[in-house]
Amino acid sequence: DISIIISAIISLCYTLFGGLVSVAYTDVIQIFFIVIGLFLALPFAMTHPAVSNIYSAKLDDGLTPAWYGSVAPHEWGGWMDHSLLCLLGGIPWQCYFQRVLSAQTSTRAQLMSYGGAAIALVMTGPAVLFGAVARSTDWSLTEYPCSAPSGDTAKLVMPLTLQYLTPPAVAWFGLGAISAAVMSSTDSSLLSASSLIARNVYQKVFRAGCGEREVVVALWVIILGNCILATTLAIQYKDIYALFVLCGDFTYVMLFPQLLLVIYWSKANTYGSVFSFILTVILRLSVGDKYLGLPAAFSFGVVTASCPTVEDPDHMCEGALPYRTFIMLIGLVVHIIVSAATDLSFCMAGVDLRWDFLNCYQKMGSVIVMRNTREMDTPVKSLKPGF
Image (cartoon, rainbow, N blue to C red; front, side, top):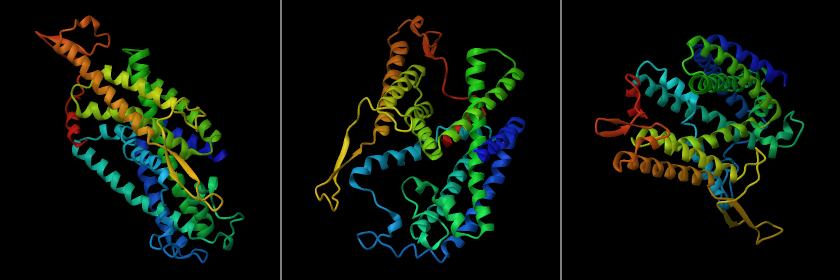
């Protein structure tokens, strides 16, 4: 708990006083820590006497290395859901677009996006290999006092591998890499979430027309509040990765279809956005979530498949269908239907604009057009083709 609090204070200080510039520069330093720490520790872990050849153990087919793992027939829905969640749910994050929109040119923004994706792909290599090393380790030959990590302790494989399979100095760099990764996410999330609330909620809803200095003061207060809230969550919830996946879950379900349509469909409007957002929130909360302690009010169904055991050769297992993807697609379709219907009503059918209570349309001469275009003013408009 003390380390969490100290890390939060450090992140809070340089985020408050440095803003986006300090976050960007510290991210550069942290990425070097991550690269050096992980790639330095990997050879020591793989050559430890307790680690056997990671390709020696095979699955039941006798060909596939055991550390590749396998997906049971009843688990395909969950794997599909989480795969799409990781691929698409990470796009609409505010901390990503904050950097994209702050780029000086569209070319630099595109290079940053593609370069970041390439670096992320490369950095998954050491993480995957550390998992393979842990699976191929005879933990009884190490100083680790317990049996091989499994169940809840499986999430600690990376720090355990660094601590018990590498020399102390190397372990220090490796654990520093993990800390750097955590700090990098912390400062980015603090600044992006707080600036979003300060600009879009405080300035536009509660204090329309307020000065820039007042917005900055509000931003400081919001950053402080978000830091306290995040620190409390980190102390109370020990499975931070689960919280991260939960955030990606809600982002994928509620925000990805909206971002997709706003960028690629000119008729997307506020009516479709509001209706689809409310519907997806209701549906996502209705199917329940174990991390939030929400019971399921209904289900999209289950996948049933045979999974025989020694005790019960006829045992059947059940797994969830990809309900997150179903909800995301429902939100996408609803957004299209509602936006098309309102566009048809006001622009084609001639419905009086006094019924436009969200103020999306305006009359230009004899033609009714959308008031708030999804296009941004130049030069940022040139960013659109790259996304």
